[in-house]
Image 1 (cartoon, rainbow, N blue to C red):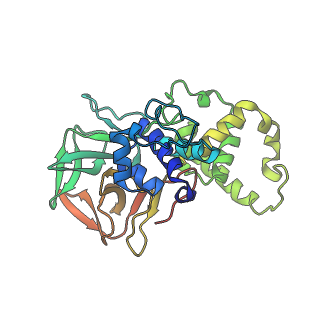
Image 2 (image 1 turned 120 degrees about the vertical axis):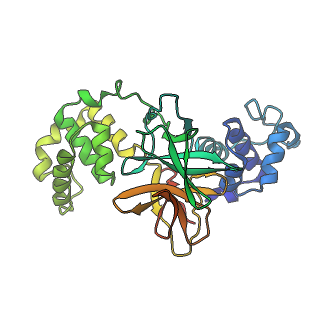
Image 3 (image 1 turned 135 degrees about the horizontal axis):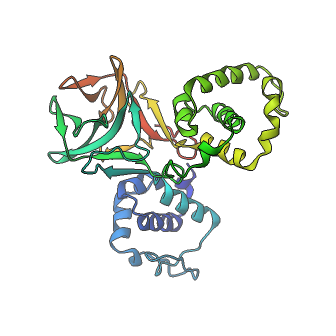
Length: 324
């Protein structure tokens, strides 16, 4: 990451922008590779840190008294940090126990949640059909009624389904959007939901996509898809194809490595507890992992079940998986 090479003043400005965007201290410290005390002092007294030699003031409520030179790299870093993971939110479940729009699903119809138990907050599971969720704690599966659901609150993710124009697209336009999404390695189930098409429709196009992959030409679409070339220049089609190709692209379930190391952008339900999912029987169940230990825990069968094979929910960060 280039952030480690940034001058201290540039990191200071980026941290101030991130604080104004309500980013957590630990997240800022990890992202900019600075100490927590550095971020904490900035949060406590943003006007106390300034460079008297510089005459170029920064803008913003928090940094109006801070004077450091503004560079393109500084602005870019500040913006990246301020928007980092902003597409994810923990939303409290309502009184009617309705599933929030664009809740993150671990699989098998189970949503990722977090709940308070004792002094800590743990990730867990919720079916969306019951008035309670479950977390693993102290060797047992605890039922909780007060919990928060992890949701995609990005611009695309927060668009009400009724207002989305996907349903009004022609079948040919959807077909092209599916093909673009398949090239971007999107999941068939995700494409089906986003474009409101049948799974068989996606799978048939997937076979076409595989066949066309044998053609190494970099020119326009040919062979089986040539009859759809007329719609490729359609503006709504291009926009839809781009949206479906990038939808939720910042989230990935990454298998834990052999050294049990925590990736830089693993999603935390609470500092020290990461969101994971593991296969158990026919279900894929979300759970918790404290990091750097050879097992995680999931609530299953009224017990806290320990698993050694699991995937960690990570922020891909502009399409890239950061290393451990």
